[in-house]
Length: 278
Image (cartoon, rainbow, N blue to C red; front, side, top):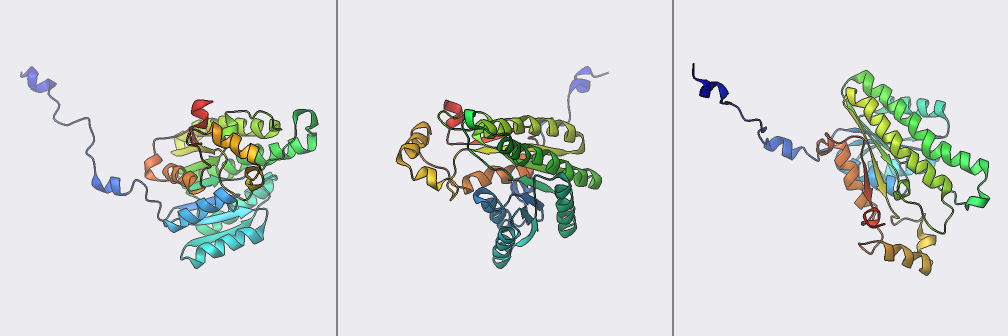
């Protein structure tokens, strides 16, 4: 018996690098994407970009007018888009709206949850009603949006992707500002992402988070127009500038596409280096 021959491996453990797989790494054509909260600055950029790259998107939010206007804008540019009304504070409404999105698109391949609000109150002024609203909108909604989408993805048995928008405030507090409810809810989302990732992994469903710092938008314009605050933000940012919404989109696409197939339970901070240096 030739022991040398027995010990020789005839095939390599290294997979062949298939050029077709490389071509598909960031290909999201045909994906059906549900975007709760998808008409804010970052959500809008995600919706427009994913539709531009060939995905079908369904935008949902409390303002049917705003969601519809964005869907029409996408459609006028040749994309496929739908719009729905959604009160993310109500679990029954979440379930109903998710079912409507499934009916419109035939299923949900990718969830991109952009729901989130901020109501600033200093610690000594925090009121139960505002704290509860922040919890219901930022945290509890993610639980039941993820659940509703997971039910569809598991039933279809084809895997899927879930992506939640967080914030650097999920990792860092902010001095001199009233961010108790915001930081607490965004921090809790990190663990929700990890737990959902573990429970959905057997179904080939990945769950990840994208956490930006301050990004250019009308919402933060009043803050950035204050020289002291703008300088504070710029001085603590290693790249020395405010981020652009499209700089958040790239990571969302990575998580949604084949390039992100082996990442789950992760939160990626899009912050110019802030969390690496604080």
